[in-house]
Image (cartoon, rainbow, N blue to C red; front, top):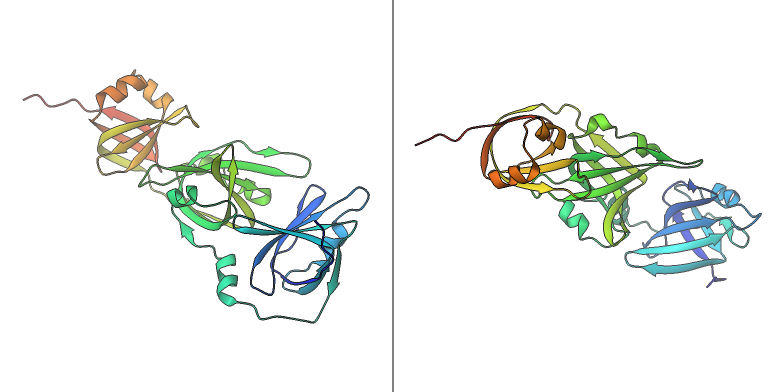
Length: 283
């Protein structure tokens, strides 16, 4: 329900456009991080409100609705009713909360998968899959899978806007650090989505892997059926494209039945480009 009370806010981020609407983040007097939605209503466009909400400035808002779900507090400003006033009034800013907001802590993929919606975090892992770029008139998005090498767990990350072009197919297999993501959910599965403050660092200097390994297990990924994942006796994981396996005249089921087996492989990052089975020595 809309409220006629006033609220003083410190604006943390510039408004980001989503179609005819905008969203941004702010902090209130209690140090609570608030996600603000500027909503266009009919002929009333939210652009005017967006221009008044300036980053690193204090302001007073009226005629808003406020609600809290899970870890996030939402404030809705309708373009036909809400008002934004500039002010010289200030309140103390908790530096620890500001630092945590702008530098979300790095979490493991398993931890991120278990996190509640709207939690802000950063992750480190390997780019396991890069999907096609999707775009509309006012948006663009690219989904990627980031894997945790020690556990084999993977998590989808949706990269929006300028971040959608920061990862290319050629980056598959490269180590990556993605800062300031937000936990989301789709079909009851936890995912990650980029924010206005997301930063992506890809290690493009990954050296090719070549050597002998003992493969202890095989995983068939339902999200990427054209790739298998192998795990070695040391716990290291590799992606094995079916095209590479087919070149050895071996089916997936035959490969599973062979485990554990010794092999010699070459890989770019964590993606196998060539694999040769080693014959067992006879007694």
